[in-house]
Every structure is written in structure tokens, then in C-alpha cells.
Image 1 (cartoon, rainbow, N blue to C red):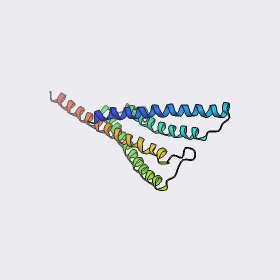
Image 2: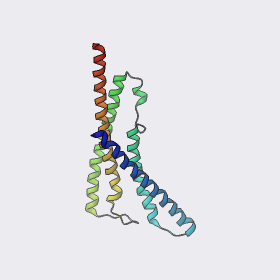
Image 3: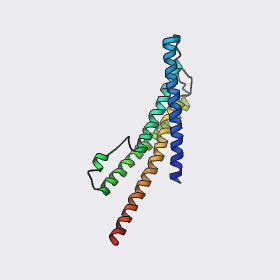
Image 4: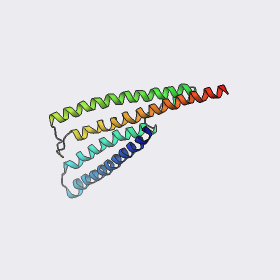
Length: 170
């Protein structure tokens, strides 16, 4: 089941990344055109691009974690025996999950505070829950995907022990 949910979640994440990237680039471009050619000041272009960049940064961090390019302890794990290195990789993923859960829970508290305050963004007049939701959204995805990765890594680790014990018995 988890293996079916992860690709769907990745597609949602990739779609949000592409949409926010396109909107960010267009709003940056329109801001430059307005400032230099039309000589009009449209402040919400900058705000929109900033919010898109926030979503992109947090979701790109998850994408980096997913494919292993963000946090890596390979220099250490490659110097160790295979089984010890695998345990170290599992422990590092668990640390990432714990951190992500802490940020996720804290971001929910922050969202509740923003809802109660009713604060609006200066230019777009959007509820500030929209930009702050980037934390909740991305770290929620990180919690889910990294927990699934840890579970799959532990299952593979256990399978490798079972495979090794069968080879020794033969």
C-alpha cells in the first residue's frame, strides 16, 4: 500500500513544484517588466514570487531527501562494513523523521495562530496561513515519505539477514 501511495504523493509534489516554479518565474519577469519598461510598481508580483519560492524550497528539500541527494552519510557508511553502514543509514533517516515530525507539529501550531490572528499579506491580501502552510505541507510529506523509506529500509535489512542465514545454513 505504501509503495502505491509514494508515487502518487511524488506526482502531487512534483506538480506543485512545477506550478510554483512557473508562477514564480512569470511574476519575477512581470515585476522586472513593470519596473524597467512600464515604470509601474506592482508590489504583489514580488510577494507572489516570494511565496512560490518558499513552497519550492521546502518541497525541493523533500525531493532531495527522497532521492538521497540532500543528506548523505555515504562517506562514513562506505568505510564501514555493509551491515553497520546500513544501520547507520537507517538511524540517519530516523533522525530526519524525528526532526520532520517536530517541525510538522510546530507548523500546525503556527497555522492555528495565523488563523486566530486573521493576518493578511501586505500586497496580495491573502491569509498568512497560505504561505505558512508551505511548512506544514512539505514537512507532512517529509514525515510520510521518510517514515515509509525507513520502514522499507528496515524490511530490506531484515531480509538481508534472513538471506545471509539461509546461505550459511546451506
